[in-house]
Length: 326
Image (cartoon, rainbow, N blue to C red):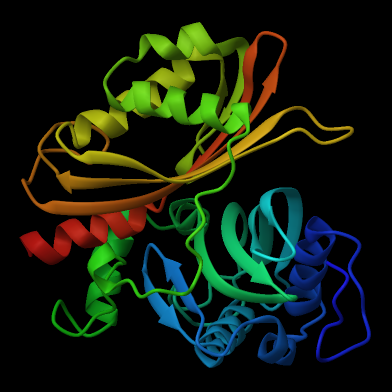
């Protein structure tokens, strides 16, 4: 990452240094205008809540978020990456965000309440420019901390955005456009192991959790759900899969890494697409179509998978269901 940025003679020591550095520069140092250089002019940015195209849309969205949470901070936890200078990089950046809901915006009228929530962003980077991105934040956890319920928030959001015909539609593959990144990650064995675990879970082979997870594992899931040991992981994954038992699961991107001073890690971007045709975490089956974009990060130890971080946006799932059921 030795190339110079357009807006400064700054040099970055590594891809993680670049990702963590520009995140702070944009959000905490309020360097919103630097997005003109750090983000490609026609970048597609995929959120579960919808597709955003172009760095000017990214700038507008960043400004709106900072107006709603002016003291927002982002603490980088890890950058799990693949790629090289000539072909470009893919950074899977896990971070914790905090802030105070001081302004009106996406989350409604200002509540004055504080929040914390995790986010994960997959960014494709070349020549110090991000040109393709996938991003999930734990919207359900933010909603809960602001005094609302994710299911009700999704319904109210449709109304605030002008109703079913006019509201922002959650992201689905049919909306997607080609941003230029066509990589699939790397062939590191730790990424392959995490992919295999997730694939077995989605084949309803839940016994893989006790076979491959450390009994003392730490688990962090959407809506701030966290816990320890096998039962926590089993309850989440069974609740998700039982809601969409016939949906198609896919590994969309896979990275494994071994770096100094860190445990072996893996980052998977995955998707689940199909019918809401089972009882589970989304209640009575509706038979409606749902697309879920998800991320899973994992750290491994001598007794198996030691820490698991999984994110998807529950609010966007509820929004998809409401848009089809009324």
